[in-house]
Amino acid sequence: MQKYQMYIDGAYAAPASGKWFDSYNPYTGEVWAQIAQGGAEDADRAVRAAHRALTEGPWPQLSASQRGLLLHKLGDLVARDAKKLAETEVRDNGKLIAEMQGQLNYIPQWYYYFGGLADKIQGAVIPLDKKGFFNFTRHEPLGVVAAITPWNSPLLLTAWKLAPALAAGNTVVIKPSEFTSASTLEFVKLFEEAGFPPGVVNVVTGFGKEVGMPLVEHPLVRKIAFTGSDTTGRLINETAAKTFKRVSLELGGKSPNIVFADANLEEAVNGAVSGIFAATGQTCIAGSRLLLQESIHDAFVEKLLALAKTARMGDPMSMDTQVGPVTTRPQYEKVLGYIDIAKQEGAKLLLGGGAATRPECGKGWFVEPTVFAGVNNKMRIAQEEVFGPVLSVIKFKDEEEALAIANDVRFGLGSGVWTSDIGRAMRMSERIQAGTVWVNTYRAVSYLSPFGGYKDSGLGRENGMEAVREYLQVKSVLINTGAATGNPFVLR
Ligand code: NAD
Image (cartoon, rainbow, N blue to C red):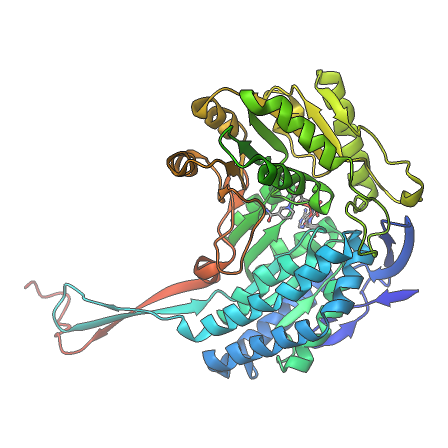
């Protein structure tokens, strides 16, 4: 059995507790690896190593261009090892090899883009109102960043934090999810090979309360970059406030995917099905509320069911599989629990509605792709994040009603609008309260395009130019170039 240690100060490290915990393969339901169970002592060691690397040694001496080159090299190494890293992710999170391979092939772009941005971080000369002064700004790193990631796309969501944090000159301690730590511990080997000095990137593993919270509380950590549930996000934000840390939070969603009668319906059906069943619905941007205009409702649902029924389930390592297992046992139980809630609330079950018992699903944690129609937006199934393959179909009359339903949730992460009317697309994209609006597409993300939440879906933005600002602080330097300071006790 594979045993994974933590990574602190440029070397693999055993946990201070001497304890290890099991990592399960969601397809077989069996333990496949053991992970170091870190605690406060390990978190402290990692933060101190990151803090030393920030202030001593080669990292602070590197030019921004040199930092950029290291990030480029790291991108090349991820590209080289993409297949192996993708397979490790599949073993741990049960997502389809086709999707994880696609993600791993794309991840280098984050390191290339932010590597390129490293030496374009510039201050400004301020045209000050005072004579005899020169004023300029410097954009400086925040210090030690703690990156806390969830189980659904571990290395992608790590790249979203790590690449801008390092481009800006920070040092980082990563805390991956206890359900999917292995890929981060494989990935970290590449840092030494890329030439990063020890301590610039560290990884501690274990449970949120035991090793995550000590990072949030640590006085030497200056920023928390978090992706995960809103419950944990709130706790992190409250705790980080005590030491005035910066916080960026990418939390959950209950995203509306809105189809108008004038849309290309074949395309919209494809978008609706991939919006909810891709990644087994385990994405924060899942299009979990499908809003259909009345006049096309029945015909659309028919087409949607016909397509959803063809989904092949089974071994996520097979390129033929289209819907894989749910990643964790608690999540599997949570999804089944929400299906029961929807039934009790009176939503009309049209497809699935329980655990998958197909022979190809074996002992894995599989849930049948599930579709409920006749959903009222006030129902829990329409308001709460399921994070599984469960779609709620809601009818609407016109644009106003579609908007009212779309915005009537506490989340605001993604949204989709399907229409052939450009005016409507513009009106909807202006009024939907969400960090991303997709028009005639769904789920497209890019390293270039800012991503984040409105309302309870989070704080701050990842990706694009916006992301690097989240890891910088501005210093204003005022230089007297000739103005007399004068005696402060003499009135002038
Ligand atoms: P989670 O909040 O339980 O855990 C996320 C991470 O936080 C894990 O590493 C966990 O160990 C850590 N953690 C837990 N408690 C902690 C604490 N008290 N202090 C510090 N760290 C702690 O979420 P999850 O179950 O791993 O992920 C699923 C959730 O993440 C879903 O709700 C989903 O919507 C959200 N998500 C959001 C995005 C996004 O970009 N917005 C992306 C993926 C997932």
